[in-house]
Length: 313
Image (cartoon, rainbow, N blue to C red):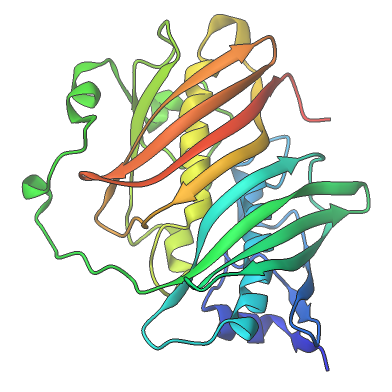
């Protein structure tokens, strides 16, 4: 018999809750190789307050979260449970965003197990569809890991990231100043500080402070910054740099594709997530590469494609 999950059962099984839980109900087939789920998008979703005011659209990374959560259910039924471990997003490959998901739409998610490996990793083909057609699709990898324990260290005694001097040397921009260029607003403004926004060249650098008061951390029982949101923080930082150029004033930066993303560790309350990268834009489209660091540890890296638009069609 297929395994069915109500919202309350999803909360208990995935150990997630609002605003991070992106499924309303789900079903895993009796062979435990495929799954389907749904998420109804309401204008009352908190994310639409900040993404974007006047033009609400579901962030691509939350579509990724929904597809990863469905895959997590399949993973749990196919990979043996090991005490003291948790399931995390390890990799994203060629995940394309094709059509916007707007308030009032229903996201229909599907996941298919492609391969299980002896190192407790598994690959999944995932899709997100609405009444308008295919919204996003790609391949993700989940892994069952033993969480790394990091000793508490006073902030002024923690090892510096490789970009500490770069962050200190440039022209400083706080969140209020970044909002002059970004359409993003709280609760989905996921960058706190940047340097040299709008300067010549392709380089961007900044950081996000990870705090226990962040709603998305509170949506995860493990109190880790969701891996999908690392990509959003990096995208917002790169977007601010691009939209600060005079020719792009008042436009929007939109994900086209996550070419590749690798996640090695997670950021936790008390961490400062440092992000540095480069972007190359030609016409309206571009590509960006980013690295994500906590202290002297690289916890993720990615390559993204984006487009700069006047509005969302």
